[in-house]
Image 1 (cartoon, one colour):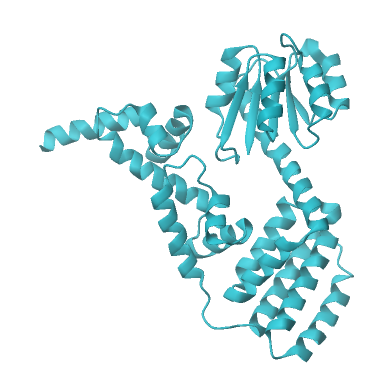
Image 2: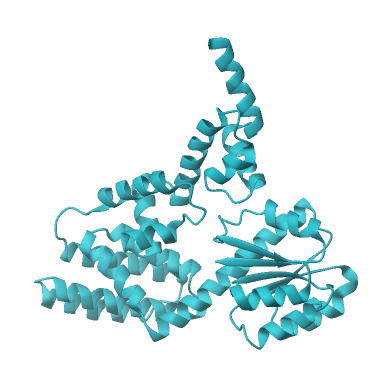
Length: 354
């Protein structure tokens, strides 16, 4: 995904771009513009998924920018930056379909607020996109069910459904989504197993029971149970979980320096769905793929920091982080000291031992 930051204050743009964990939020590119006209041109050329725009900008203000964008970019999410005195502007922007707004000045607390607003906004956008595509083509469900039955991994399939139910589907659509999932599950199980009569009977009973469910937790629990039952009917030998996990770890080790490395790029390489890939990995490793990516990157960062001729900024880029500030925060949280302090400590120790 791409983001665009539009603000005539270069300091504000720098704060937002350098201080937020864009990669963890799912963005591989963050663009910037210093006025409304430049923002409009970039938006039309690059089609970002998210735009954070100031209300008051030269050439085109934020409200005029939104008006022009809405005529040609229906799917973009927009968050406005405003001051208390801009309330009337913000009201009009919300009428035009702006998702949210953040009050200035930009402080560390505001950055945390922006981060959370982005998560919520992009979650809603992904749900909208996912369910829109699901209604026209439910190939994603077919693929997920096929992977689960083929690999004999009911737990991963059930956890993948739970993730989609909680993060990719609107609550009001969940019951219908679960029904589509169950239908696909039983159809594929029927095609695979020799116990076709039993599967048909199980499907009939399951659909009758499912129709009575209303609670989200009960829907998720019920479908997990059906995943386990169908997988048992379709077992084809040992699951390939360990094989996939080894491939994922190897791919991370070879591609840790790639800014775009993510669950999505790994699952595309494996020809699996992102949700299933993430669930499969966590089931076996006890941690998610993003955590492993950070661990590998920081391991290599420690090695590079032993070379005093490489700046911390270049170390950050060489291990796959777009912004040095974000890299430094991750490193500090993991190691307990900043990259520069770590370098000094290790080089000092090396001199004493040498």
